[in-house]
Length: 443
Image (cartoon, rainbow, N blue to C red):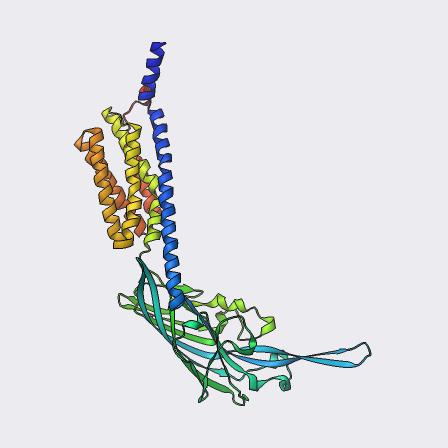
């Protein structure tokens, strides 16, 4: 019985397969603190979004401009016979929208960064000039009687998602006449924010020119709908890291450390909506499908980068523990599972340190500080465990190489998968090389 117990203990202590199972269990156990750190990253990210939303609510939200367009009311006449055989009629006011024939929009954007606590909030003030011309609205395609068209109630409207962020009174110059624009979209009752001007024009001419100047506060992004037969949009800003968005990228753009300039030339044939429509037959949300513009993003989103880094935690633990296990096999010196656990917890601290420091010194310096602290701690502890400077510094060097490798992965977007696959392949090849002469049957 004593011999059987001794044999079991020897098998327990010396079985390579059993140690691999327990090391794997430690790695799985370490996913708990990794998950907790990942949750903390998400919580800090939500706190940042709340801070941005709070400042943006007072300054100006992300802005979207739709329009301008002409809205012309008309009467729709319905005729029927009553039960006595007499003809009766009813008239109901309907609305038709007409887009400009040509439109030029020039947006000069002054970006600035403000802080709410430790969180950065990207804000801007845009000076937008809108000019173009309309042709006389044509109702012929709908076979509407000209006598039913209410020309004197025609309105010039444009929509702004955050109308409360307008910083100036808006005047419409319409065919050499000046109109003060009012809040709202007039009688058309479109469920959106914006401005309107009652033109009171008889539309006796074939062409009508206009221009508007407005100053608009906003945050995070500025989008514009190209609502005309031919739309030219120009944006310039002092923001050096634009992200051009929308259904179409700029035809031309220049980006430098001093800012950017972008220009779109968009013909009506590329749009997903017509140049004129009747309101009761048109889905207003279609206008959102052709937006173009820019997101004012930070060059490095520290929370996204921190979250991405935690996705490689399992790989780091596997490679580091595999290296220590190989040293065990080579040196015949055992490392206790609790020591594996402490080393793993030290490696998990990297992600918490990275998150904490990045909020104050930026992601790059936070990465340098966190990796230096963890590599120093890991090397010192490994020296105490293996009692061999060569192996301890080898473990520290591999840890340092892994953090350098991770930083490369985080910086690369296009080649991240390729670099990751080659890194794993190389790590496996090194482990196979170091263990090629081990007699596994003797374990």
